[in-house]
Length: 365
Image (tube, rainbow, N blue to C red; front, side):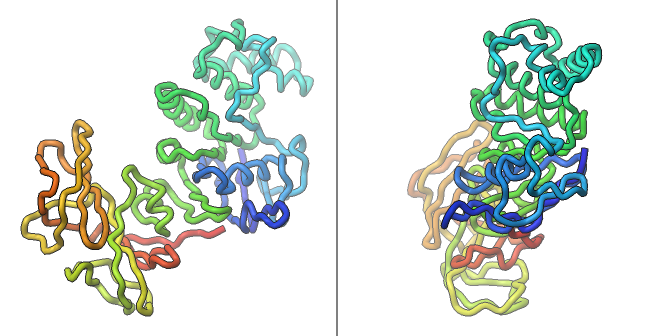
């Protein structure tokens, strides 16, 4: 396996810029998720790494070698697509072994490597079955096996679980993560599903309109979002925002929201009068009659062990994740307590974070 280095990667189709000067590194053995909505540039980025698209500019290195303009066949990579792309006239064994057969590998070695790979994926008992009669989960394992058997420098996966139903998808998320830990493969995985990214990845690159908004561990992008976009895209429910207008001075530790003075992380820079947004995750909100910040209960959603309570304030709607035992009435007035250790402050116009208790800089593409 090998390190993947992307430097100022850009892809332009006529006037449309699909990927805007992205830079990031996937370390040897690391699992990176390219996360974002449709059209954000994540699949185009993956296809450039694979050699299926050539970049307009920038550099791609695999294992230290510049492969920017190499054909896909000249790059030691394995690609797993959303559609399984299996050969229906072949059984499982022949599907997995086909890449080795194409490379002229000896039959005895093909047999040994196919059986080793099938055992790793727990499909050794169906090696002689036709792929056309397999369930979706098993078909995806066969597709993965065909990639793994080659022992490439890196694996590239384009929403490989997208066609599976919810139960199969949850199973495959767990199995893919366990597989990664066993073979320690350098992997770039494209998905629009934050659950998949958070559950499997060592690092996440959150993309938006061709730009990497933030690159970091799942914990970093969740706890310390670099922009309002990241804060809103990651989390279910997403981060809450209380909006207010204010000038900010470097070193300030409090702001006024709806006439209530709130303690915030230290402001890092002077800022002129403008619209700001105070962000907090639903699980970090508490209700207290003593709190001067007030709101009115708009509704609640029972989730078994907890509930999501929506509260309308003059600064914006808040959703709080609280224990299920407490009863709330629609229209009830409540005091809202925000834990200042878990707050983020954003410039609402640019969307970027200007203060957070544990803020780290985003790496922009």
